[in-house]
Image (tube, rainbow, N blue to C red; front, side):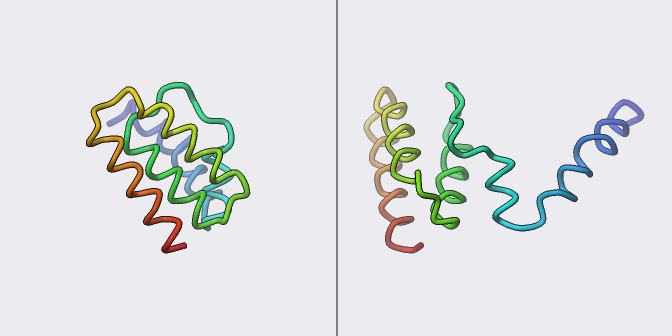
Length: 91
């Protein structure tokens, strides 16, 4: 625990203090700078935040993730497609 305390106090708590609303969460996620490797969960969270913020690059972000998932099994591709459709209808 002693090794975690400096990380928690120096990085995690300041981050949480700075990200108190969806706008600052979106900025912290840097939604338009999409890393090369993002497994499923971060993709869905980034897409959700982008759509809820009505981010102007939502379609670009979604297309980028769809292109990456195109190498995954078909059920993963279909899940992402249905998730994107859900976001478009809901937000």
